[in-house]
Length: 137
Image (cartoon, rainbow, N blue to C red; front, side, top):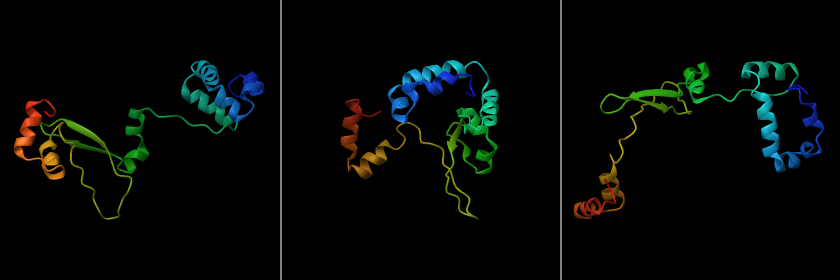
């Protein structure tokens, strides 16, 4: 009713959760067609007025710029080798009085030799063969 489609509420295909799941492609298409007709903020106001629990799904840019995300230090900006910025997700676990350290993400292949040597036990000759065969960069 709140979105101007009372017929969806009386359609037997959508009367139960099983029915909504079975016909979700059709229901999603119907709802999408209606919801595209107004900006998100207008729909949220209408749904709130009708006591329908709803909220927006944020874009990545909206998440990064959200005040709560900033207050929780959930976005960490650091510098990679060469000076380019890396935007990383902060840890959700916070310890009072302890500052978290965030290293920039590794370059592609940065730790290949270490992993092959320390984890897989490959010596220099074995790693050289893998490079010559094009298995690793």
